[in-house]
Amino acid sequence: MMKRLKNYMIGSMAAVVACCLFLSLKTEERFRVFMIGDSTMANKQYEKTPERGWGMVLQCFFDDEVVIDNHAVNGRSSKSFIAEGRWQKVIDQVKPGDYVVIQFGHNDEKPQPERHTDPGTTFDANLRRFVVETREKGGIPILMNAVVRRNFVVEKVKNDDDEKLRLIDAQAKNDVIEDDTLRDTHGKYLDSPRDVAKEQGCVFIDANRITHELEQSLGREASKKLHMWYEPGETSLIPNGRRDNTHYNIYGAHVVARLLAKAMGHEVKQLRRHLVNYDMAVSKNGQGDYFTIEEALAAIPEGKKTTIQILGGEWQRPVVPKAKKVKFVLRNGAKWKK
Image (cartoon, rainbow, N blue to C red; front, side):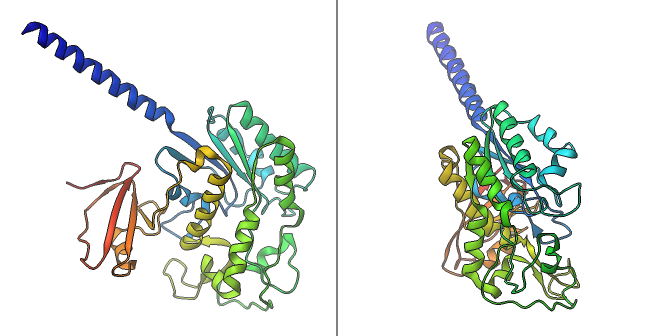
């Protein structure tokens, strides 16, 4: 009897040790994807605006083994991101096996000396620094060029005058003439990330081409739905409305993030294994398509099979109408209230 009990205890202890080792290995498998860039990528104050950077919602398209760590900041160029010490804070955290997604250009084009760089020289040098220092820490750099601006304007828009494409007040006079052809505003700033990636032998993703094809396919009117285009009174967060052809709204950020996540998976095998593709996301911190499960359910057509991922937090399990075929996936520690 004692021998049997001893063997049982040894077996139980071995099982516990094996379980702990498994959990430890699972924890070690998690890795970070650091994001550095400008406002088109950055996290936003979701309580105050429907604006989203595509990096803010990227977690929706990768499983829980990938941690998206977004350090992009509004208005920053590659130069000011370094000068303000933001790059140092990122590189200090990078560990072997982590990724760093690098996307600048919008603000490197601006004339202010604290932000301006030149393609082929100073812009390339900053991108090269990001790549080299990431590798020195054992990380894997991914270079992207800037996402496209929604520019169907017939008159050529200068890189330092993209405010013509962004009116804070939708009631303000806008005398630009548009047609059906999407036009580039970034010029040679699109080439630098590609050139540095080729020089350094690292991954390059042509985010400009991907988003250009998206917006051109939607056309002059439908492409507005991706951006911060709101009529006066359309949302209480922006009572006077807005016409912004650079920044994304919630819907646009999710569309772009899905495309760029797919591109990342296409270029990087390890990331490909962690891609997820759910119909919609709910999150209390602005990462999702909706803030509440009830909003998500209301948006689902009857009879359509839909998978809703719920990101983090504690939630009241909803009553799903019988006509709606819904599956929930709890992620990032999300759980149902007891």
